Amino acid sequence: MEILLKSHKHYGSLLLVLVLAVVIVALVKGPKPVFQRIVAVLVDINVVVGLIALWGSHKSISLLHPLFALGAIGLLHAAAKSEDKAKVVKCFSIAFLLLILTWAVNASWGPSFLKGLWMISL
Image (cartoon, rainbow, N blue to C red; front, side):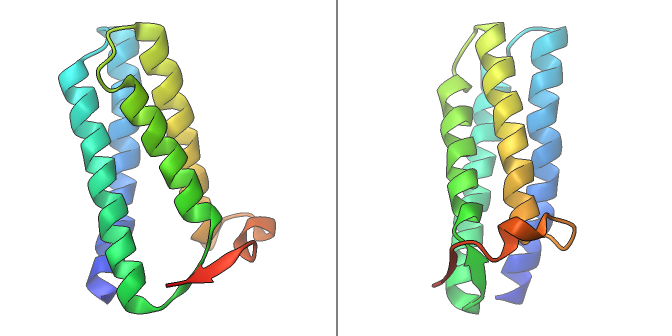
């Protein structure tokens, strides 16, 4: 399961870049629904990989980690098919911030007040 945890971590970092790329493309060239939908599905895949890795590793994580991730997924899918530039930029920007918060909850550099909050183990 260690390989899945590492994959989840590194794949998540790549996804941050892709979510930011959607925002930049939407600002410069306008919304691209195909690209937006692909990025949203890739984030879904990373969540599934993370759940499988967590289930098998029996590690404890903060409940905030999946809650922030699910909030980001909701925003990504809300704007994935949209042609409205403002909606895409807002939703993907907020999702980007939520994904950074998701990462920060369990990262060594994250704020300490988030780390021990609502710990769960699967």
